[in-house]
Amino acid sequence: MRTLLGKKLRIVAMPQKPFGKNVRIQDWRAVLAMDGSVCLRDVLSSGIRIRECGSEEVTQLGLQTGTLSDSSRSLLFEIELNRDILASYLHHTRKLIEKQSSEPAVRKDRELRGVVFAGELSRAFKHKVLMLIIAAHVADPRNLSLNSIFSDDFQGRFGTETFSMPFIPDPRAVELDLKSHGAHEVFRFIEDGPHDTADVPTCQLMKGLTYLSHTFRTPFAGEALTSFVWALAAIEAMLSTHADKANVTMLEMRLKALLGDSFTDVLSGRFREIYKYRNALLHGNVSLPFSFDSRSVFGYRGVKNSNTMPFEFSQFTYGLALKIMQRFFELGSYDIGYRLDVATKPSQN
Image 1 (tube, rainbow, N blue to C red):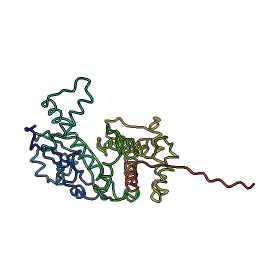
Image 2 (cartoon, helix red, strand yellow):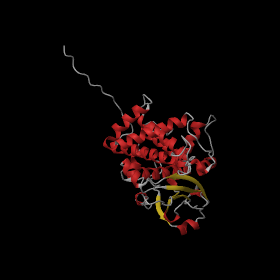
Image 3 (cartoon, rainbow, N blue to C red):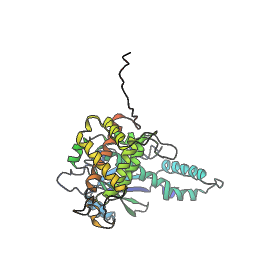
């Protein structure tokens, strides 16, 4: 364990480059304000350091930024391993091995350290960082986006992976009445959500967030159809109760009840449109290009029922899922109950 003392775990988050007239400049202030206030599980001395790093430092770290990343406004997340962190995750890993292994639970510390080194500790750090970024994005989707992340391997070698969260353009944010909330408050709300021992989501909000998280694993602009399907599944997860899986008419009624005055006639019409497209798609009535064809974003022009609107539908559906999550936060609830009351006239007899 001594050899790990003082080692650092680091993640660099690369935002998307702003594009278009209606996109604001990336704003990381809400995330930077959480510097040192977020810790790994049950280890108070593991405050995650958060700071902005410019393109020069990114280059020094040897990161390949790509053309879609804004390397001048990247974020660096970092923890330095101390005795409390190592002891806590050594204990956690030992319990995990004992629970999962059918063999006698006797392991050498060297083996356990290997598991901690390559697995549980780095996974927990990455999970916490990404949940922090996701919460900040839900809190203010107009100002926070992400294109990719880089995680190091304790030796200063960084591996990259796509983890993309899009900007929500201002006109779409206005249409959906998306708010700007405190990132730290939203993060704490998500973190305090009900989980069972296996961290399997059990409430509507966390089920929805689980589905929506799968949109982050593909480049949003290039995989609009995939993002559309996952975002729509997230909406259904949050609008369906534990007792039923509602049809589209019931979903619309629940959405209207949940959003109140924000659910305008325009949103109602758009909601019906995405379900018409969803049904046509799942029943094989949409003309799609091959997945490896660049036209998969825009479809075939002039062809009836062609995939000409996936980006538009995807952007709206994604934004609507975020809006529902914001309402859960505003209501302070992880599960929402829906009830249909029928009023009858009293008997005249």
